[in-house]
Length: 237
Image 1 (cartoon, rainbow, N blue to C red):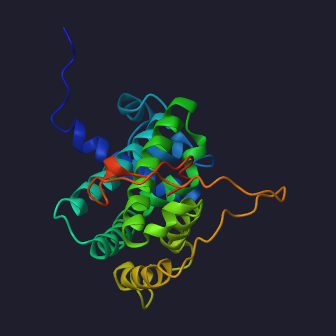
Image 2: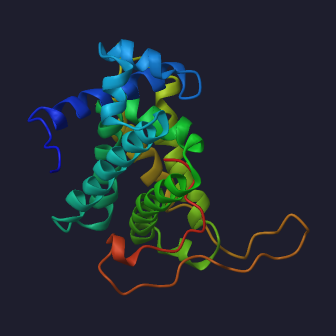
Image 3: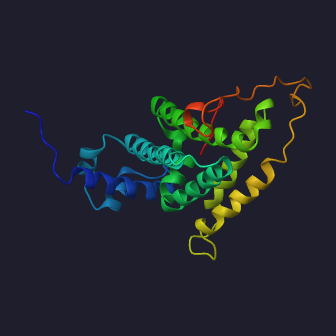
């Protein structure tokens, strides 16, 4: 007969994820030990292993749950069918607020995905690509010229660079919050992205012309995940 879960199993597991995310964010995944995790949670190592078979599974669950939330956020922002600029602005602002409210999870995603097993890392990278491609699709709706060349991926990653690494310099109790900064980032990006001119294929490192990759033109509804441009690698988000 299968052993039934206690009513508090899911609650306890969520508490473990939150505590582990905080510890990994502060110490780094490689430096944090299972003994430290158990101590931070106020449980025994045996009980911790009852919920997670090893530290890597715990890391994967943190990353996977966080990406669940980001993908759900994309769907939520898409739902009202906002005009192109309003959609991209809302997407930027909502993501930055999510980064603030899930700061430890975000830091773990940015710094510790490399420690996942190949299977788990590939799943995480694939889901990261879905998020990045949703932003790329939104960017194309306000700057269609980016479809003509190979700048779409770099421009998309410039935006993620503006958003993702804020935690490295924005003080938690400083004068500005993520909510204050989010419209600033959106304004800077939207103010500049339309100024980008794609006149010719960029030079390759060997001096030749790069093929104009970019995204195929899509006639689906702007900003939908289903119409996302193809980006070979997402990078970290």
